[in-house]
Image (cartoon, rainbow, N blue to C red; front, side):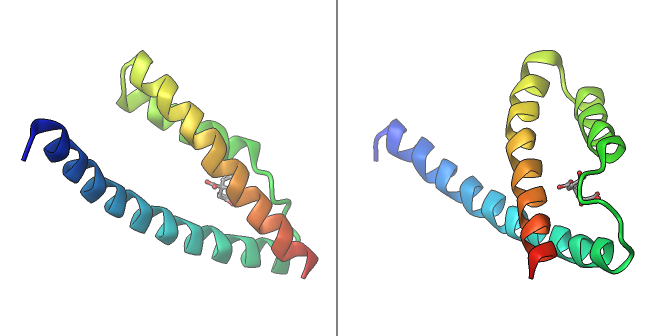
Length: 89
Ligand SMILES: O=C(O)C(=O)C[C@]1(C(=O)O)C=C[C@@H](O)C=C1
């Protein structure tokens, strides 16, 4: 097997783990959404989002942290949309 194929197999394995974790995260944020609805708490929690970005900035050097910020902006946007949709049900 050539080297490129080997790299891609490794990427596939990592992607499986990432997807599994993202689905677990999604299930949790769904529960958070239900809790917020029951307790009339707004979906968007700016302070919590800042904490998440702060944790990333603390754990990774700038170029890596910036890439992670970009990915997390999307993850959090999707989880807020999911919670907003639950709010409408
Ligand atoms: O912590 C929350 O309140 C969540 O709903 C989770 C989450 C996230 O996806 O991490 C989503 C929306 C909030 O604005 C902040 C964080």
